[in-house]
Length: 86
Image 1 (spheres, one colour):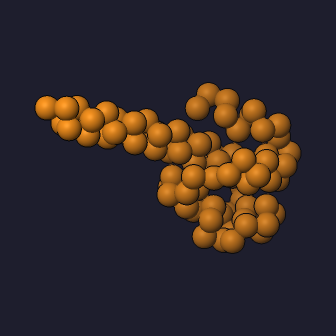
Image 2 (cartoon, helix red, strand yellow):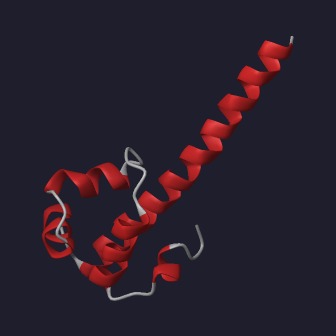
């Protein structure tokens, strides 16, 4: 019983943790599209590998604070704007 509860809690935690990655990735994609940039263009401007942007947008990477700062700078936004409404 305890093991089942622990497993359920861990699964819920993983889902919630992953949810923020999905919402953040969607925000990055939205901002990129608003600028009319391809993933490759954004990667070039932010000094990332071209596949990294796609992995962020698909919530496959847990992006670091340093890289969040680079994205904000690339979009000419404050960091907090990247988290607005997510």
